[in-house]
Length: 265
Image 1: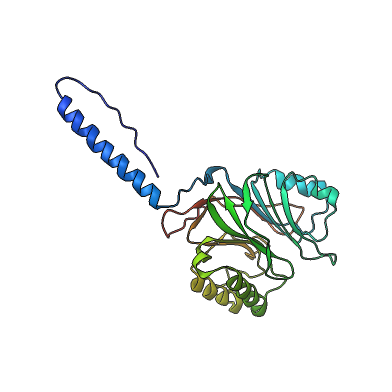
Image 2: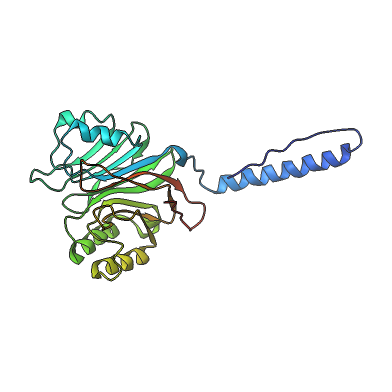
């Protein structure tokens, strides 16, 4: 909510008018306070909440940790971390939810600055590599957050993920979903059958896809999906020689004031 700055200049000549103005202003403030009591107050500060999304192709070195920290994230969503050592994880000064894999593919991580968010219960597994968890940001902004990794392009795997999400997240809270990572679906190829299925699933759930083009070669496999109560903006792509995937760096999240979402590439 934006508040205008009001300058009051009282004088003897217009004292009655100024009194009336003050009474009117008092009524407006009173109405505004009543309205705020009936609506959930949102203290979510999107200007300072930045996410880094990256398929790191193994989180196995201090170099990769430094690459992540360069983006100055508040929340980190990583894919294909494989089986990182505890020494490497300790280089990241964040709270962590990790799924490890010992077969040189897969695994995900969700990391966040201490005190930046509050967990609402335990995480739920939605596939072999990914979990989804309900969190509270800023004290009262609720989000279902997931770092997603789908190992290959597959209608079955995609349907399974959305089926699990529907089982776990009430339909009344689909507008609070934020799922980001490596989907292994080229969202740019509108002739592809799996991409068409993805579009159908997103429309059914009222979700919006946010992407930057060509995150792996000429394909856009890494992107963000969000409900209409979350605004994602200022997303940019960051290349690195340490992975064959580009990262989505510094997208900002905020509580949407309308049903429309915006993306500023």
